[in-house]
Image (cartoon, rainbow, N blue to C red; front, side, top):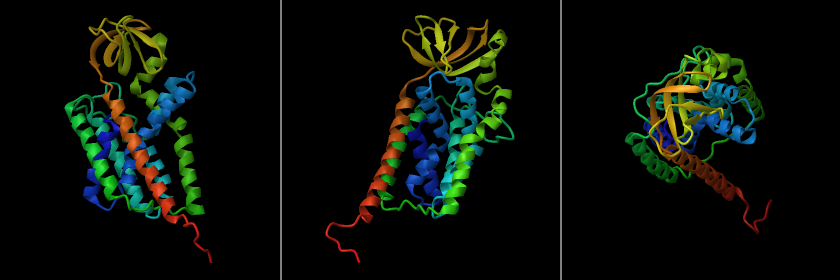
Length: 303
């Protein structure tokens, strides 16, 4: 999937082309909604390293689907003054985010656009994350976010919190958090990310597998996957530890015969971190400026 900066560049321009008055702060929120489950997955892994990684991956896939992005968009828009406009901004940017994700080549990966009716992964696979197009879009994201952060700095936060709306927003948020386990059979049945193959260890021999961004160690010829398991793989002509994607077939329960592999760079993670930090910064500045405007001046008399 493109990094956060690339999403911010493309999606801000697209949204502003439709309506130039849309605040870049809310566009940015729409850009990151589909990534929130994947961010939370990393946090959960860090806080609870012994958790069932395969079940967590299934939960995350469900929550990152377009359907659940719409639930979160609905919850957020209920807290705003212009609810319909904000819902279309958030949901539209969630959809655009997922479509952009599908453009990149991601073995064993893709996006769920039709869930819960279909858990087929959509992956158009036009270019790798390291392609020069991604780098150009990342640079574009830096420029676009800086320009519109300045131009939209006077726009209000547009919150209009009312008790009834807060109740409905809380219910949607509860569904967003609690409902994914009800749909986790879908990703398992479709073997998304090969989670069913990875879970049934005794049935692995002879089955195809693809791994996205595993950690390859040339000293041991092992690939550490998202579960923490280290698979034995064919010797790959690399001299340093690095992230790779691969396709292959299980020779036995723990050994994979590799048919193809691709080496990844670490740029995507850095660009995503910068993008997320930039979004957090413009929101914190907006909140700070709002508080500064409403704060009473010292010595002002109150009637």
